[in-house]
Image (cartoon, rainbow, N blue to C red; front, side, top):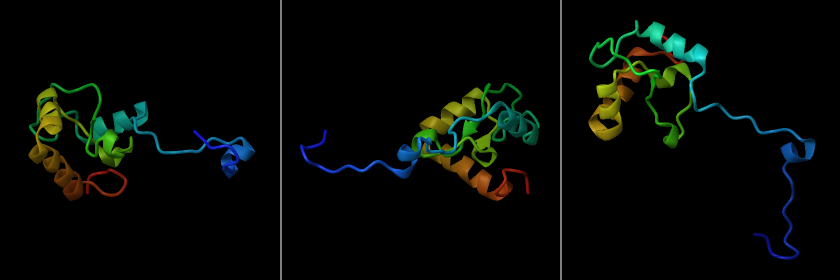
Length: 108
């Protein structure tokens, strides 16, 4: 809430009627398909074919992770749950990304 007489200028985007653009935190259908194909439709951690419907965000959305290919990994439900419950599994995915993916999210 502003105080009477307080000056709060509008941003340039607001003045021009433009919305700020930011990277989406969700994977687009195209990026999902690219991640699954890159990972050969197998969980990157255990190799299972029983996969989650969406890739795992290696950097969580709540931590600023985006829906870019490099931030996604194909996972089974057990590895996905473990990644969200155990710090060491979460770090495993971060190391996997750094070791095997280039800046575009393709295998090195």
